[in-house]
Length: 635
Image 1 (tube, helix red, strand yellow):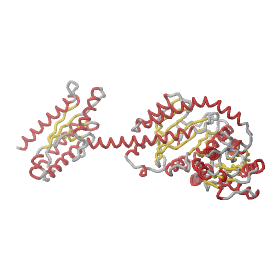
Image 2 (cartoon, helix red, strand yellow):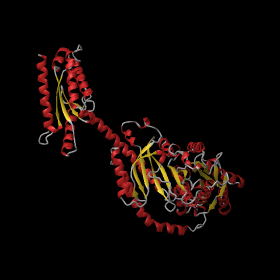
Image 3 (spheres, helix red, strand yellow):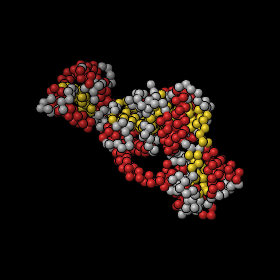
Image 4 (cartoon, helix red, strand yellow):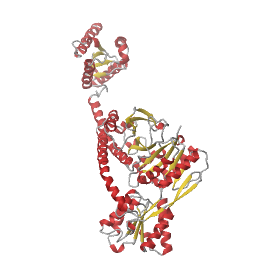
C-alpha cells in the first residue's frame, strides 16, 4: 500500500508551490507515495469569513493520522493561526512533518538562506549600481520571511551608510493594489525617488514597476527595482525583475529524498539549509543578464497555443457558472455539473472530483450565520467524478476517504484539494488530479474562484425557490386546519391522473367527508365554536388516515386520498372512523367534541373511461348515502 503525504500551502505563492511539486513528485519512491496538496486561497484583502473558510481545508478537513508525513509551507500560509493549528494536528497525529522556511520543535526544517541572497542583492546594488538611498516594500508586519528580508536590508544599509529610514518602509500585506497606491501616493514628486526600491516579492515588484510607469518614470533609468522569489511572470516581464531564487525545485528534491529516507528507516537531519541565489535582472540596471530576450520569444511563441487553451477554458468557466446559475434545487445540480465535465472536451482538466454537502439547500431557509461555521460534513454527494477523462460512478463519499474510487495502487498520484463554501458555511470541496508532467500554475485557483463565485448565485436561486415553495405552500394550505386546501387537491388530482394514464401501477382510494350539524353549531354557540368543531373533525380524519394526504375542499367538506400502508387496510380504517363517529354521538362530551361526519369511499379500480373524476364522484355519492343513513338513525 502506498504512503500518503499531505502538503499545506496557499495559492498566492503557487508559483513557488508548483516549482516545489515538480521536483518533489519526481524524487519520491516510484509507485510508493501519493501526494495530497491541501490548497487555500486566503489573502489579506478578502473577508474574514472567506479567509476562515479557505483555511478550514488545512485543519478542519484532513484526518492527519491517515497520512504518513506532512509538508507545511509555513510562512506562505498568510495566517499564523492556520500554521499553528496545522502544527498542532501534526503533533497529535505523530507524523513526520517538514516545515518549509520555519522551525518548530520536533519537526524537520528546510530553511532557505534568505538573508544571504538578500545581502548579495544589496551588495550588487551598492557596488555595481552605486545605490545609496533605498526604500523597502514589505509584506505583512508579522510575516517572518518578509521581516528577514527587511532586517537584512536594514543591517546592510547601516553597515554601508546607505540612507534607509522607517519612513521608507511600506507594509502591504502582500496586496499589489496597496503597493501600487503607495507608489502613486508617495512618489509623484520625482525628487523624492530613492535610488532603488526593494520589494519583498516579485508580484509587488511588478506592481511597483507598473505604478512607476503610470507616473511616467523609467525603470531602471529613474529608479531601480528588485523583487524576491524568481517567479515566471517576473522573468518575462519588461524590464525583467532582479530577484532572489529560493530554489524551491531543489527544496522539493531535498524534501522528497528525506521522506524516502524516513520511510526506509534512515536518519534525517533535523535542519537542512538551502542557499538562495541572487538573479540580476533588467530592473536593477543589468542588460539582459538572464537571456530574457530569448525567454520572451519563447513566451510569445507559446501565446498562440495558450490562446486556444484560454478560449477553451473560458468556455468551461462559462458552462460551469451556468450550471450553478441554472440550478434552483440540489437535485438538479450534479447532472448539470456532469454535463460540463463529461460532455465537453476538456483541454485543461482530465481528473476532477466535486463533492457537495447534500444539506446545502439549508441556505434557502436559514441565515448563513446560523449554519455550521467552517466545518465539513462527514458525508458528501459526489457531484462529479472524472479520472483521466473517464467518468466514474457517483454516489456518496465519507469525508475521510477524500478521493472517490481511491485505490492506493499504481503510479504515484498528486491531488490538489480545495474548499467550496458560501461565506462561513463550508458546502464541500473539489479535487484536481495531476501528474509530474501536468502541473499548471493558477489553474486550480481559477476553478476555485469560479465555483465559489457561482455558489453565491446558486444561494440566491435556492432562496428564491424556497420562498416560492413557501408561498405555494401558503397558497395551498387551509388557514384554520393547516390541511391542504382545494387548490392543492386539484393539483393532487392532476398528478394522480398523469400517473394513472402512464400506467404507473398506481393504487389509491378516495374518501369524501361532509360535516353534519355545522350550521347548527354556528347558530347556537357562535362561529368560534364552529371553527373548533371543524378542527376536531379534521383531527379525527387525519388521526384515522395517518399515512395519507387529507384536504379541506370546502367549509365542511374534506377529502382523503388513501395511499401507502393505509390503502392496504382502507376498509378497516373507514369502519373504525364510522364507529368512532357513532361513539361520539352518544358520549357525554361538549357539543363541539360530539362531531358527526358523513363519509364515502371509492377505489381506484372503479375509474371509468380513464376519467379519474368518476372515482371522486362515486365516493361523493356514497358519502351522501352515508349522510342519509346517519340522519335516519338519529330520528
